[in-house]
Length: 246
Image 1 (tube, rainbow, N blue to C red):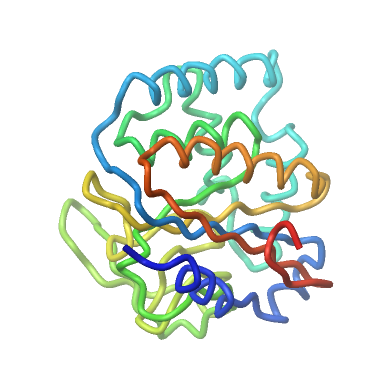
Image 2: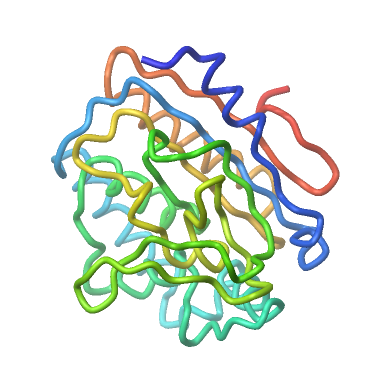
C-alpha cells in the first residue's frame, strides 16, 4: 500500500509545459492517484454504468454527428494546433462516443468505469497503472526522440512521436500520444492493477464545475472498489496549480 502522502507527492511532481499552454491556454487537467483498489474483470456494476453511458450518448447526440458536440469540436481544434489530423487520430472522447451506438467496450473493472464516466460527462479520461511510471507524469511537446511502447500488427514495437506532438510521458518515455489519443503498454491498466493514475482533460467550453463533477463522480465510484482505497488529487491549469479542494 502507498501512503496518501506518497500519492500526493507523485502528483505534485507532475507538470504541463508552457509550450502546451501556449497552444491552449484554456487547458485544464485533474489528476487522481489511487491506491488500495481491488482489481478484477468486468462486473455487473460496470455493466450498468456502461449501459447508462450508452443511453446518455444516444440522447446527447440526438441525430447530430459526434464532431458537432462542443467539447469534441474543441479537441479537434486542439489536435490541429500541433499538426495532427483529427479525422485520422481521434481524441479518446470522440472515439468512445462513436462506439456508444453499437456498444462501448467491456475490458475490466477500472477501464469500464473510466470509459463510462468519460462518456457520461463528455470529458477525455485516461487510466493507467501508476506502478509502471518512472517519475511523475508530464504533458509536453515532443522532441521526437522519446520511446513509445505500443503494439503494431499484433506485435510489440517501439515508436516515436512526431516532433512538436503533445504527449504525456515520464522519465522512461511516452505514456500517451497526441494528448489523449493512444496510451502505451508500459502503464496500461490490467485485471491486476491496484494503484492507478487517472487524467481528466478539459478545454473550453467545458467549465471548471463540469470538470470537477466528472472527477468527483469517478472518485465516488473508485471508493467502492475496496475498503482501503485512498485518493490524492490535483488540478493543473495555466493560471493555477493546486490540489483539488484547496
